[in-house]
Image (tube, helix red, strand yellow):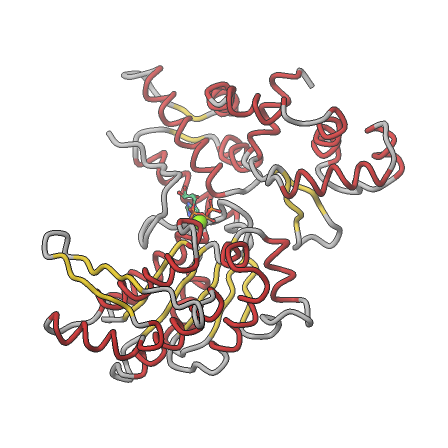
Length: 389
Ligand SMILES: Nc1ncnc2c1ncn2[C@@H]1O[C@H](COP(=O)(O)OP(=O)(O)OP(=O)(O)O)[C@@H](O)[C@H]1O
Ligand SMILES: [Mg+2]
């Protein structure tokens, strides 16, 4: 019997809990030629939303290109991929496709080759020092893509989805931000979706009126999946595979995972494995005790990884993390909390900032008061287990 809980890979339609509105918003932005920013913490399901929307639009014969910018080491590489994937999306004989691509991307002068063995286009372009600086190159690529979009029948959705989009700015600097805006604000046929998890950075990019992306499109700040929906999903998956469920245990999974979808699935996966392995023939019941012992198994498995992070932290940072656990991330600048860390307020603030940039903590932007949360709630469980507090 297959474990019904999946984590660590992008999910598609059919395996996602909830997220219907977000998927619909992505599809709408692409169909209408709009711009959408989808910003959310790590492992909240951004990529899965993008994948589901892309798959559904592909069913409507759309040309939707979805790229993970993190996987490129330069803007040039990304531009080459935009061109080669565009070529792949076009129909018709190879010669015609090649001509069409060379025409719409004429400013880049791409050299295109088609490998019959791989069924793939490869793209190269010469670097013209007069013209090609990365920011201009990406603007030319986006303008070319818009030309291509305009050549498509009206009812054919055309979109470009850039996941982990903040990486572009890391690769190309602030200048690139301005160039992208200048290009895409004139586009009305291509739908753009930009997604990312560096919430602080992206929040500033779209909410700061001095930045190029301010008010460029619609912003969605992704929230956790509603608890009730995840509860129904968990109960159904357990019971359909012969496991009876105590309701408090399902709640406990979500509490320990702090509602992060990845962690919920990971813990449920472990509980399922442990129940199936420990009690092959007898009755299998998910109780609070099972959840707690499965969490321990999971956290111990990752001991080397968590130990490495913990040992790389300064004593102040470690104490600050403990305070985050004690206080559930609230009032971290209060006198009481600062005293409990045994340091001054500026030092604690600095520890919080540096651990946020190390993606150990994240600021919860949605709360009325600023909360600090663990990016990986199971790291907090590891600290509790191994340091005995
Ligand atoms: N709506 C959902 N329903 C069920 N599980 C989900 C959902 N969203 C996310 N998950 C779980 O979280 C995992 C990670 O999802 P995904 O990769 O889409 O998140 P992400 O926000 O793109 O993460 P990252 O920040 O690492 O890029 C999935 O493999 C799945 O286990
Ligand atoms: Mg992702």
